[in-house]
Length: 244
Image (cartoon, rainbow, N blue to C red; front, side, top):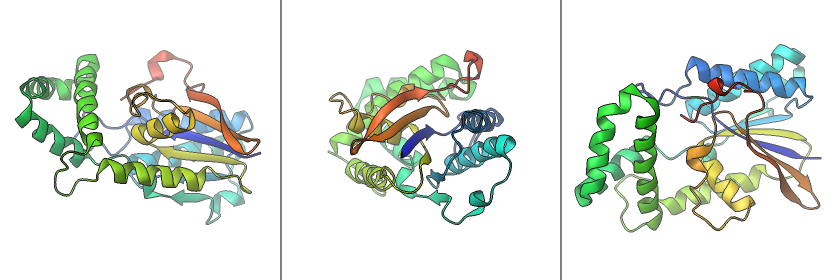
């Protein structure tokens, strides 16, 4: 029976120059997930990742965790075992930067919040995260409206279409029983909103998806049904759970 596990990447380098790589803690989270799943008989038949470095690294550390329990297996070296699909990529950091400049020029309150965020970003912490999510919420809402798209930036419609195309491709029953898809917060939010048939904002899940959390769907009577959402059973201690 086909099962799809939708997994957000591990903690990324949010306070550094390059966000698109995992912190040591992010790699540990992914390793712990792989180890936990293997110990509970959920050895992957197929791994799918986006092409972003943090997504690829999460899949790699996850597989290391699996191998720590079951050892190397021939199927892990099969050309069809690991798949890269750019359709699962997060929106680009250039999108955030372009829209923040655009909105700061048009909305004084946004510009004020952006200035506050710039002062605390490198310090991290709850204040930095709260400001970031406040800004991001406004950016994504404006992006989705589609009234103005900066040059070189992916449209929301294009983003949504590629996410849903990839979910249609990989959320399909086949010979691979246990499928793990490693992606990012916004793609997961859109897919959850769609599969759970929710009417509210499609970005509603995005700020609350844990790093390396599992959202599990099982093929039952012709469709994928949710089994668990945003779970982190491999991180029983709160101190090891992160949102950013």
